[in-house]
Length: 121
Image (cartoon, rainbow, N blue to C red):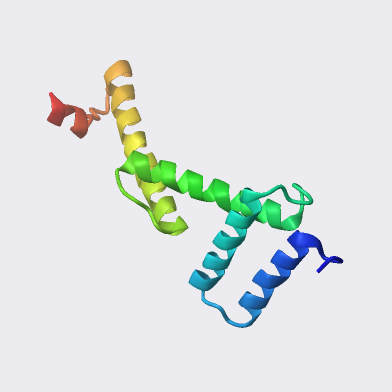
């Protein structure tokens, strides 16, 4: 234990759980427990591999929470957050397109209209 340090032991623990076929829930629970231990005390190295992994997970979860708040729902999986983000981007593109038509006209006389703007009017 002294040779590896806290971060090394934690990485080995997570690796052992993964190699033993632990489900992603078991791995996530172990990572969460290690996160609580790590954030509760000063670690040997703030740049160690465990700290970098935990920081990445923390940032991903924070981004997922923000996307969920914007969508008005709780997203429990990164894929759900990604799908919601794409749907929001598509909706924003439609709003921007309507704005461009309203500001610049129908464009080259093709008679394009914005259905969303017509519904609101």
